Image (cartoon, helix red, strand yellow):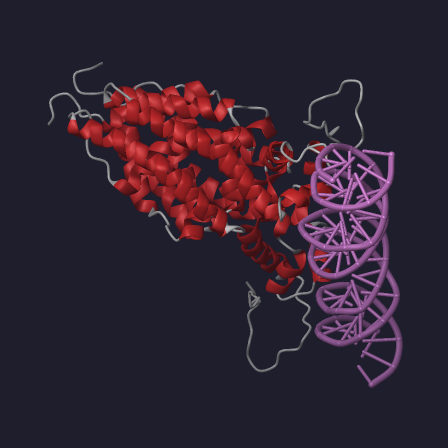
Length: 222
Length: 222
DNA sequence: CAACTTACTGACTGGTTAGTCATTAACTTG
DNA sequence: CAAGTTAATGACTAACCAGTCAGTAAGTTG
């Protein structure tokens, strides 16, 4: 395919000199373009030339702001994901209600973030590149996985304390996230390739239904 | 890293001519080497030179048996996965017992296949390459996903008929597979990169526990 | 063992790409 | 507005790599 590399920079009115000096705006524009290209092609196949074209600059300018393709990649991941993790933590801290409602809320929230922001594109990229870039996997674990697991643990603890949930061993927490991760992975790889996307809200609701009834204390017990 | 490219070909005794004519054995040896290299590096980063070296032949010989890197890749996927899918179908057809036992058995079986064969490496590769090779995604859907879903449906139908399970909508079946897929993906990408592999049996058991109690009819109902 | 067939080899080709740097031109300052 | 500063450029390079093919030698046949 031959993308018509539409630059993301603004200002298409009257005077448009071929060169512009806009030191402040470049990094943001480059990161936005990098997100587009990296999530469409993965790390290896993404070409700095294309990212630069999308950002409306030359390749030389790109290397003026980021020292290498790999550093650009990491900066893009940071910028895309971290704000969303922080917001999720704040939501959890302030939540009032039962653990069951909170669990449903978390899955629904993840579904919404995945389908409305670029975060949904990250799991595929991270999984694809983890072997080649272990440093990136480390970063992902400590800045995203650990923090998401901590939020889930707080929900589980609340549920156990209230007698709503049975205890869940720490190593099995990933199972509770797996449907939402599967959703993101499917919709960013196989789904589009075969024209069968999954509905995020439906998956979140069904996952909550299956998983909740499993971790809930059944009537007549404890 | 510098792999000491250990050839897979046998015969390290006395007379070892530098060249050998073994038309019959080559394809199998090449596919085995291709599996190693493709699953270690992904499609894009795998180099035919390295695959050839691992198979104990030159690159020219590789192209004598397979017309291109892509065709070699597809042949490797076929050879690795299809026998296991067939075996799973045969197991399901002959199964005698409750739907609950069958569900647990299926997850345990998938865990075993993932950890003892190379099938566990396929999901990561497929997800990584689906966008660049939609044809491969198509093949994977029709030859693996559809067939695995059909086996799961047969379990669900059996359970509903026996009053063990509540009905599950077709589009949500993927949720029931998601923990096992997550297991395979984690253990082939992020897990090794950060030195935290998941125990397949534990994940299978916990996933079955969570999911079963969700799809089971609770005491006192229909 | 000579003549022949063909599996096998590896140097080579044509194409691609991450990163550089001498040059250019957009802005700033006195 | 002239001189100075630096953001921006794009041609270039060094390296890499999928696939080729003229040549080599292993094995076979009469």
